[in-house]
Image 1: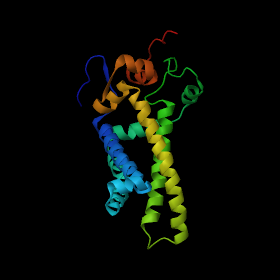
Image 2 (image 1 turned 30 degrees about the vertical axis):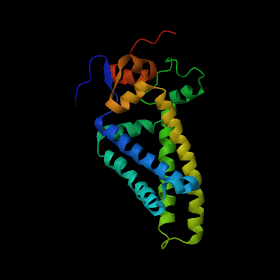
Image 3 (image 1 turned 30 degrees about the horizontal axis):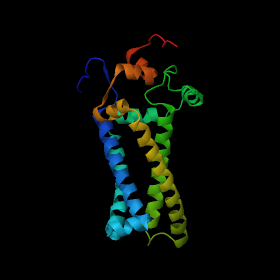
Image 4 (image 1 turned 90 degrees about the vertical axis):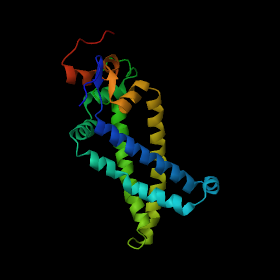
Length: 210
């Protein structure tokens, strides 16, 4: 593993970045193809509905693959476990009106990122299950497919809004974007936004001045 430059911290391993990039790319294809399938004006503009439908279906089935492959790597498993761990400090962060002033020692992920990860994972599982029910017409009764279609449509809308929110917050923090792109972040940024994580890596530090 390459040592980060002086004044930088390694935030994401190469395996984590690949999983995030591949899964994110597949999600964007799913959202774009879903928009074409559900919007008549886009259908006329794009055409080739059977092709778009096939792309949507097989991209959906492929979405879990980078995540499952990533679990072979220790760093991916560690980050997944961290995202799944909600602590008292996370509740404090959510309740605080000044949560981003750096006074709460946030771990590697803040509570908002953890909620986004949990909701994204849950929505992806629901979409995969309902999509499979809708696709396997010979194996599922009509009532199942009708219910699955309703759940799939509304979950898709909620998931799309979640992705838009995730991208919006990412674009507002170019250093966080650099972290997932290159793997490293400046120490000064980490001390302000994720002080608890820095202390896990470097040991206890002086509390920040108020």
